[in-house]
Length: 114
Image (cartoon, rainbow, N blue to C red; front, side, top):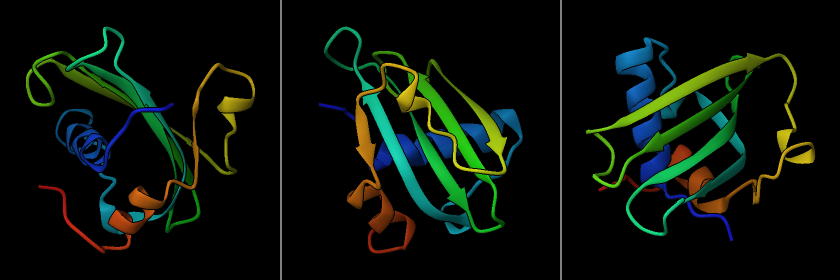
């Protein structure tokens, strides 16, 4: 089972904006097409990613990580853009979810991350 939360997406976007200087906000996301994640040692740390369809028609693959202290201490994010929806789960061992309902509800503004 894949492990990720809306907080992982929110924090990934924050790190992306602050450190990578690429601004993708909740408001600029049309749909989350795919999400995956896991904790390598079984607690605290996280590695994973999200494939987003943006409102401008592009697709973004965001991959992030944080250590056992959580987001805000030791963490990082990368992003790649494509004109069509990438499908890395077909060629990589990514155990994830298609169109994750919780993330798409968050994108639509149904609730905020604590």
